[in-house]
Image 1 (cartoon, each protein chain N blue to C red):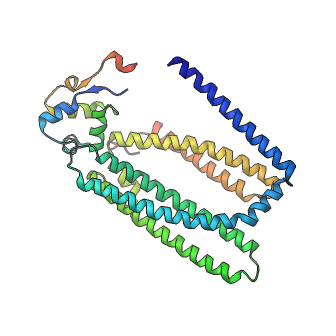
Image 2: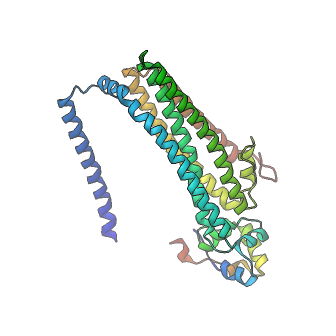
Image 3: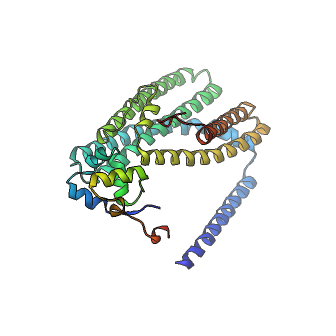
Amino acid sequence: MPLLNRLKEYRSRLGVNQQEMGALVGTSRQTISQIERGDYSPSVTLAIKIAKVCGAQVEDIFIYTEDNEK
Amino acid sequence: MKAKRKIKPVLAAILIIGTFCVLGFGLGFISGYHDFSLESIINLIKNNILYIVVPLFFLVTAFQLIFTLVAYSKAKKIYADWDGENEHIDKAELIIDITIGILSVSIIVLTMLVSIWAYISTNVMTEEQFTSTLLLGLAIYISLIGSAVFVILMQRACVQLVKRINPEKKGEIMSLNFDKVWEQSLDEAQKLTTFEVGYRAYKFTNKAFAIAWFICIVGMSYGFGLAPVITVSLLWLTMTISHIVYGYRIEHMPKDKKGRF
């Protein structure tokens, strides 16, 4: 089940577009777009890379609540 | 909402039963009205199919040409106007996916139509029709070769456009190891999508093979011969065995650091 996330917000703060974000974390623009839309939950590795690039913790960007499973 | 969910299966069941009632009535009416045997149907199709196949061939060729050129131009324009930020580019990628799909399907349909035409026309052709059939055959085969070349060039153009939109994608479509290189350039989300698509296609094709095999078995009683049932069986077997082998390798065999067997 996809996680709620604030990736778009953090990406705006960094001042990069989706393609540039993808290049920074080693993934594609499509995947960044899918994550932001909530259509895809990244792997642990990718989530950690994203958090590192954004200068934040994984939990700050990706939000898991019990409601996600419903 | 719950009531709607309960009504839907009931409506679907009524629709299916109703459709079969209408079909059954229609077939029963026709069988009483005409000489309705399988042999008569086959003869009816054989004598008239050329009137359908030939126009259909040129119609599909024209559709393939016009649709893919218009769609590709639209996708290219969306890419040219893309500022690198907005998600309109997703529409361009969708258009390219549809275009590649249409190209693949149309060439298969065209080769099937040509095969039907070639088989039927050589069986029903009279001496007087030899020259006209030959000229038509030339036109059809030249169109088919032209279509095949067009498909290759358009698919290459579409892949090149996808690579411009997504620079991390690698692979040259004319190369023999294109599939391998392309797969290696996919990221985790794209691999997941690709593999899910493959599995769903496998499940659907499995059912399609079962139906085709049944038709071929029944057809043996009506002069289809052995070739269809053997061909379908071999293809079904190839798909099933490859699924088993790859399933075993992926689940049980150790991989190196790069994830290869």
